[in-house]
Every structure is written in structure tokens, then in C-alpha cells.
Length: 120
View 1 (tube, rainbow, N blue to C red):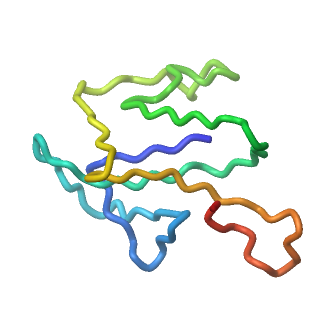
View 2: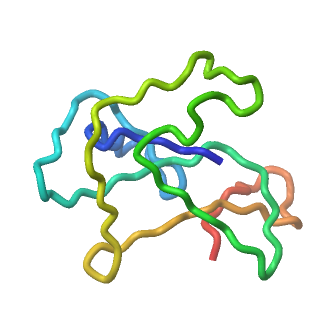
């Protein structure tokens, strides 16, 4: 799955955002001051992946698009153009907690029940 978010447009819509679905307003650009530590919520696109016990999940965080061109069609529809460079630091640990939330589907769920929940 892929997800992307410009940190300068990180404001969330409080009425539409849920734990599993951050909805950004994109109404204002909030510059980041040098040295400032900010939280950024990034939604991962829909996916249908079954994880079995013992399997690993790898999270890749990049400051640019992963592929310069679409790996299937060779286009994006055009090639990716890099912007000015910068430095992004991901802060983790007790003072800067990070998390990856994945929804999951109960195989025994009945019709009409909400099926998307936070995984334990």
C-alpha cells in the first residue's frame, strides 16, 4: 500500500477524521520551522493483504516518490520530477511515540457490522 502527505498541509478535519482514516483539510499551508518536531498523520491507501502469524511487515518512509516511473506501465503518467532537497527526521521513542494502525476484518463478521477496526 502507499500513502503520502505533505507535512506543511497536515491539518486534520476533526469531523471526518477517525483513528484509521485521517482526513486532511488542505486549507492552509503551515510551514515547519527548522528544528521543529511535528506530528504528521499519513493515510495508507486501501489494501487487501492477509498476514499470517510470524510474517513480517516492512514500512518504508521516503521523502520522494518510491519509483521514478510507474513500474508496470513505465509512466506516471510522466516521469517524477524531484523538487528542492531537504532533510526529514523521523523522531521516535518515549518522547515522540509513533504508531502504524492497520484495520482488520473479522472472518466471522456478520452483514451490517462495521468490519474495519483497529488491530490489537
